[in-house]
Every structure is written in C-alpha cells, then in structure tokens.
Image 1 (cartoon, rainbow, N blue to C red):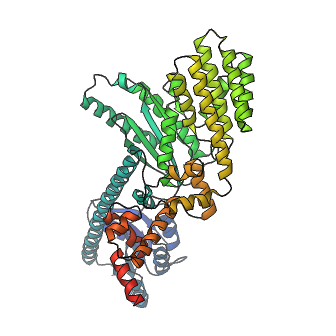
Image 2 (cartoon, one colour):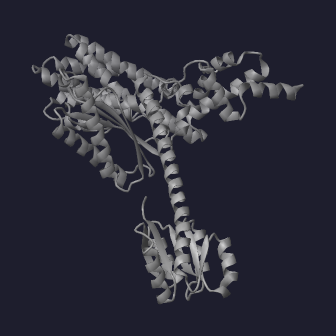
Image 3 (cartoon, rainbow, N blue to C red):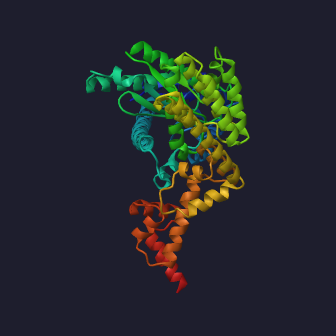
Amino acid sequence: MRGIKTVIVDDEPRIRNGIERLVVSNGEEWEVIGVFSDGQAAYEAIVNQFESIDLLITDVQMPIMDGLTLIKKLNSESHDFFTMFISGYDDFKYLQEAIREGAIDYILKPIDRDKFQLQLDEVKERIRNKQKEEERRKDIEERALQLTYAKQIHHLSELTWNDETDFSLMDWTFQFPKGHYKLVHIDIDQMLSKVKGVSPSGLRDWHFAVEKMMNELLVDGFGNQEVQYWIWKKGNVSFWLLLLHEEPEREGTSFNLLMEEYLLKLKKKIQRDFPFTVSIAFGNEFEDLSLLPAMRDQLLSLMKFRIIEGGNKIFHLSTLNNLSNEKTLMMPSFVYKYTEKTVNAVREKNEREVIQAITGFFHELETLKSPLLIQESIQYLCIRIIKCWMENDGFGEEINLLMKAIQITKKSANLSQLKEGIKEWVTSLVNRLMEMEASHSDPISKAKEWILHNLSESITIKKVADHVYLNPTYFCEYFKTQTGETVLSYVTKTRLKRAMELLEKTDLKIYDVSVSVGYQDTKYFSRLFKQWTSQSPSQYREKYHNLSV
C-alpha cells in the first residue's frame, strides 16, 4: 500500500507544527506533503501542485480563506479525499455544516494526543478500505479494457483477412471511438526467401520482437498526443496498424509529422535489428470504419509498387505522382508525344483517338533496342493515364488500375500482345469514364435504390460504390455529406425497417425474416433489432398485432 498523503492547514504555528509531529509519529505510512497557514494557500497547492491527497486536516476559522470555504471549493471541483476539522467548542455550528460537506471527523482544541492517534487509526482504516476498493475497480476496468481491445483486434483481423465483408457483419464498428483514423500496413520484403529455413518458433520470436518494437516506438514517438492504436498481425511477420487521433488531417500538422517520423524510425530500426527489411504503406485519413476493407485493398495495392521501386520503402498515394516525375528522364521524345496524345484522348473519352495514339506509340516502341527502356516507356504511359483517371472526382486512389497494367506487361509474350493488352485496358477505362459520367447525375439515389433491391444479398461498400462508378472512400464521404449518415448506418436502418414491415404484414418465422433482410445469424439479427427498436422481433410483432386488433 502507498503512503497516506496528508495536508495540514492551521493559522496557529504551534498547533500546525504539533499536528504535523503527531501525524508523522503515527507510523511510516503517514506522509505529510503540505503544511499551510491559510485555506487559500492550501487550495492553490492542492489544485496546482499535488497529484492527489488522502486526508485534509484543516482549522475551521482562518484568515483569507476559512476551512469551510476551502472544503466547499474543493468539493465543487470533484476532489476526492477525507477531511478532518480542527475546532474550538464555540465552532460547533460550523462543524455541523462541515459534516454536511463530507467531513468525517473533528479534533477539539486543545488536542489530546492519545485521542488524536485513535482518530487517525480510524481514518487510516477508512482510507485503506477506499484504496483497496479503488484498486479493485481499476483492476476490473483494466480487465474490461483488455477484453474490449481483444474483441476489437478480433474484428479488425477478420476484416483484413476476408476479401469482402457484408455490412451485416460490421455493426461492431459503431462501438469504436469516433475520430480520425489512419491505416498502416507493414510487410516483410522478399518474405519467402527471408523466412526459408526459419523454424515456427523463430518466426514467432520475430513477430513478438517487431510488435514490441512497434509499441515502444508508438509510446515514445507520439508523446502527449491523444492517439489510440491497434496492432494485429497477418502471418508471422506482417502487420496492420490502425491509428486514431482527434485532430483532422492537415498538411504539416503535428500528428502527420509524428506519424511520418514514426514510420521512418520503425523501418530503419527493423532493418538494423533483424535480418530483413520491410516496406510500409499508409493511406489517407478516414472517419467511417466501414471503409476499412477499401483502405486495406488500397494499401495492398500500394505494396505492389515494390515491383517498380523495390523494397525497403514507405509508400503513400503520392507515390504515383513521384513515379510519374521520376520516369521522365532519358526516354525518347516520341514517348512523351504519344503519351500526351493518349491522355488527351482519354480525357475527351474518344475511343478512336485512343486506339490511334496507342498504335503510334507501339509502332515507335518497336524501334527501341533496350528492353529496360521499353519497360520504362510503357510504365510511364500507364502512370500518366492513371493520373488522368485521378482527375475525375473521387478517383485519386484507384491504384489497382496501375497494377492491372503492370500485370499485362508481365503476361504478354511479345510487343504485339502487349499492344493489344494495353489498348484493351485503356479503351475499357474510356468506356467506364463514359458510364461514370452518365451515372454521376444522382449517385445517392442510384445507390439507395440498389441497396433497397439487394437487402437479402451480400452488400459491401465496394459493391455499392462500383454500382455508381465511384471510388469507395470518395463515395462514403460524399454519401455522408449529402445524407448526414454513413452508408453502414443507412444499410442497417433500411434492413431493419424492411424487417419491421415483414414482421407486421407476414407470418414469416423470425429466421426467414432475418435471412430475407441479409442476416444469416438469427441471434445476431435479434440482438441488433433490439438495439435499434428496444424490442425483440417477436415482442415487436406481438405488440403490433395487439395494437391493430
């Protein structure tokens, strides 16, 4: 048990010093942390200097601020401690009010040493009981936090393992704190070659050491920033990190700077302490946790830039811009000429001119002798087309488009096949741009209509966003701005409204109602229904039928 922190306040030096001696002589567990001659000085020290106190011993009548005023002010500010008053017999009327303010005992002047020590023993027992209760409460709270964290990690891990997650399985996101999130993926470079021959226990040791390093650097790196985080693994040496902070993302904000410093330190420390390097991908800020699958896919796509850039790198969405700038050196002038023709044709959504520009590009490409130069020229063309795509609202994160182009270059056996593959890829983008333009008139209504007609099917953010030809992140932000609610909240509300209609107008079993609105787990559906309506499905049906009789 820790010491009993005591503060003494009395305007008479002799009494003040005498009480201090009596308290200290009562045992080593008593600790006098402050002695004051008036209530004002004691108040300022308790509020501004002392982290906590256990016992306040104060005179009733003092100049500047009396003891009763002192305890009233501290009580109004929710300070939690025991109080003993020192008083003469003629102060009894004050003692009555002091007891109403929570004082547990009083000491009459002149102070009787033996009686005072008995009083302190009684107070000590009450303080010790309170401390034990606080420790029990803290232990319970700590275990509850650990359990909550474990459940959160379980949900996050499932979300990053599953390819697509239906909204019906994402209601747990409502239990996460509100704020501004960033997702980070840390992945070992050349994993298959690096872990070859390493025992399972060796891999577990690596995993434990890297996770410990991540935690330590997070604590050291973010200091007093209000940051929460969750770390979970993918395999033995690949990690996901979710960060939550209060302030919105702005260029140059302290959080962003600290995060970039943290990732750089982590990458360097892993390279120094382990026989491998890692690449790190991180995305933009988001508030809606139902976006996690889309953010996960974005980071996994960013990791594929290792094909071009190599490992031991930190990748962000700006990587695409950097690549475009880097690939403009040492290439023939025709590459720029036909690339700009292709990009302009894509902007104009002119499929015929796209085909002409790409045909000219590959015709000139056949004159090159260097396979490396041919590869870089094609990469430059693809990157510029993607940047053109990014100019359309909400498409700043379609990294997968570049990956598709790179896959075409890898699978093609010759330039002829490569030309046809690239031509097909670009013309498909032009067609999609035309479809997007036609659908952008009212994406919210189109999305709501699609959701309403697919309640019994698996509904994911990607499916809804694809239906209206918008990037998932942009679509979620646009939907919330236009409607005032998240897509997840809208889907859940729409499903439960439909369930209420079925309960009112049909005799379907609860299981059939659950499945018809997209919930395969009837218990989960019933629990969710009760959270939203304060009634179970059967109670709701019974109440409705009774009212309609």
